[in-house]
Length: 329
Picture 1: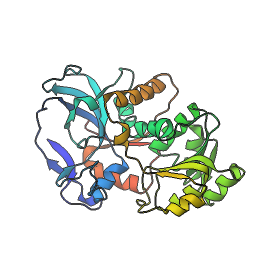
Picture 2: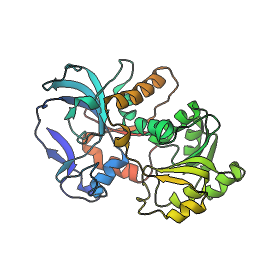
Picture 3: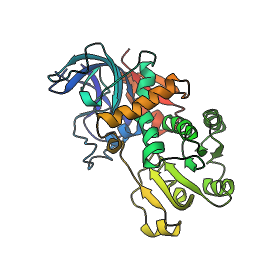
């Protein structure tokens, strides 16, 4: 079957069409005929070799990319009793979705309600669950909290704004263009900062009258992390969950003390999706919000599977205004 992957680490040009076996599911697994695969920054990190030393996200070569997808169950392995051929399902945190089909542990698959389109279900996997754990678990936002989040017009950013507002938080977000500022405002952001025009640290401190924010969600990384830390209120938390400008190599403990005895964490989504119950609790929430009309999910564009390299160039160029998908259609 067709798949997209790499034989060596490098830039988008290393992505190529591979002919890989159509494996049978083993015990506890299911084979899914994929309609969509999501493109995410984790795919970029795997492609470049940034995660080659990671035990959580292993990157053996040659490697089919893609950490989320949605489609229909084709066949199930021994011991799988909660899934049947034809079931609509979605999943994330299992590599290999840039393909026509994928064999996935059954406990990672979530049923997709009939009134949730599969492209939306895909967007609510890795990006949606990231926004959910950031706002509900890494930092449990409460009414009256103030949060800073970067890339408010991106896939995670748009969902995170809405979840933060649903929890009663005040939301400050950074964006690159006036057009993206309008997107963030439409999703509920209270304040938008054009980071190319002004220093977001100065703006955050002005907005909060010098108090800082309770939590900063930083997916940009190298270019922003020092100032994100300085944006915090005393004993606040910065969550570095990505590195679109480059991965953060180090943070000085003294810098955390000087910023007001603040906290720093660099989580993996996998640690917040530890078992079927935790996965379902997040996706049930997300599907519920969507079905109730309380969550807008923006699909930026859908590319054919063979155009995965173009998708990587788009996401690395920070040109996204929502979710990027690959289609097998």
